[in-house]
Length: 258
Length: 258
Image (cartoon, rainbow over all chains, first blue to last red; front, side):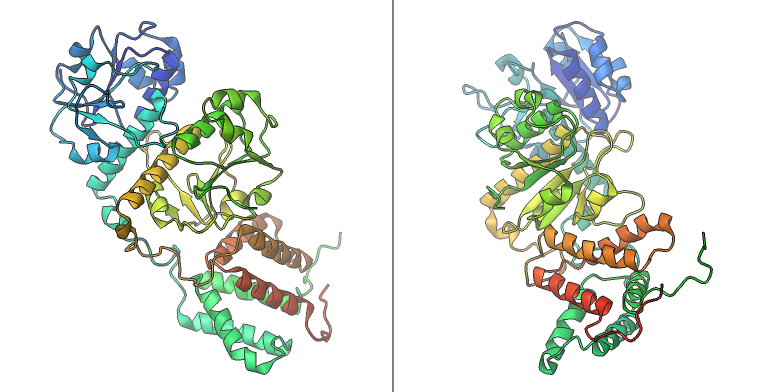
């Protein structure tokens, strides 16, 4: 069986509630997954509740493949990850979601396998998987529901994918030193004009009162404005605002007399 | 108000369904979050459905703090992240969940802010936040529900926390993504007081003239000031300066224009 896309296959083993199947399909769509396989869902298939809950991801529900047993669903899979806590009596390699995504080989058929809502995967399922994905959680509350687990796994897959695609993997590790301002920052001449204006106003209003403090205060104030990395337009806006506050708005030429 | 733990505060603005509040509380518990703040939940508070859905996280529901409006919920927050898509008409720094977690300063009061289920955050909320968190998704289906967004944000927070716990030295090399300000940034209550003051002055001087432009202009202006990441002292200085410009320290010669 050929796998439709390069996204991993999602296998739900004995899922119980149709609503949960639908919610998984939605989370799959959120993160670019295409193929859903269902192993003997408890309430049969198709399932209207699943389709309803999937809103926006009905195509995934409609194309879902039904399998009578786990091994049939796994037959063309090269590498499978079981999403579950490790059973006490079995040794399996355990990875976090991001570790799993980093080791994926794109030319293989990959599956992420999820167990039934209440009981999780059985040892017979887990043993067939190559590794376990464990989502790190607070030790006091470890249970995530089915769709939430899919969200985390899907999110990590999509994230790694975008890093591979080159959407800013480089940028990612180098935070911007200044807050980005889409408009280019104003040249210093605009800042100086702003500062001249403020300086004039402050002198006229006797703002400083105490002369010997002026130098430090003025320095701090300019730093504080400069830190905002304003564009020319922003400086213009601010200058206009200050002028109106200081002088008062001039009467409108043609104020509507109504 | 003191924040109970070093985990960021979760603020839900006008949440609609109790079930979703409960699901958020559960996801909070999964990833070690403690403090939930609710801004005017649609169906009132307390809410039995929220408590029921929270199973295992009832303590978070019982301790949730109720606020009449957004600014009250934000008053002691130093740095807030809005979880939302960027509005078309506003420029804000946008980060992915993992970028956000890497830049968190553990000694500040941090909030992650979520909007109502159907409509998301309004621009007036977004403008008060320091950055947007956008969860990368497939472009064909971008909507995650409230609890799922909380799962992703919570997962990244918990993950980064365990990385820091594991390999603390690495974190030190990550440069500060915000503009350097030796003084700690002011909590939002100070910004709100500044904005109220400016808003009053601008109304009194008929600054906008054209009513329909006011919203966007006011948004841009607040963003432009917030970008400077001012301390309490700096906001105080600026407010004093504005007051003196507006009222005049010395009697003004012939004030008014109207």
